[in-house]
Length: 212
Image (cartoon, rainbow, N blue to C red; front, side, top):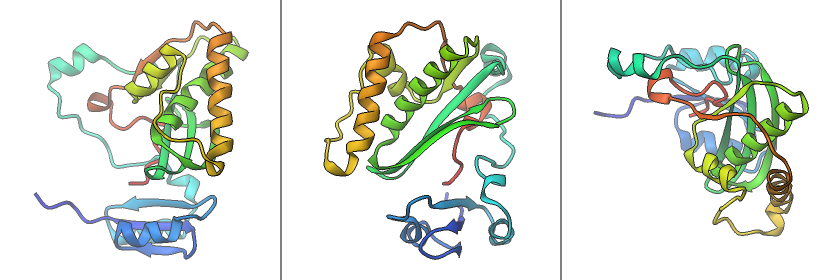
């Protein structure tokens, strides 16, 4: 089956507008600090979005319909809405990376960091979880944290960031943040539950940046 064509709205980039391919979109956001962009299924939707505000569209997508059976959905159940959902986005691999945490039910953004130079999605997911843990502990909150990254969950459990990305001057600031996160895990205890977001049952995690 042929891949469905998408159109890309760029609100902030080297040039703004609607672009008909990911390569054209990527050329506008590469090396642009604070780029704002998102994909749409039709040219009309992308053109309408361009006239609006980026924040009104980020993380929004078409209604999700699970392909799992009723029995499977019943077994998984519904998300716990007393929670924070976290996610990361990266342009390139490695590339500009940012992460955020949102209220799972309302999608209200609770925290956001980045973009950082030369990061990876796994690093962003790891940092997002630790950021959430520190915030919830400070607030003495009983919320849980949802992530769709098994890798990041494993790193947090092991209290390490097992990335293969090499430290360089370009990503020095990012690795300083990673070191702080690892140090926090080693020096703090927490009761917060870190749970896997069930994408196949519930759709994209609410913190998803919804760009591609």
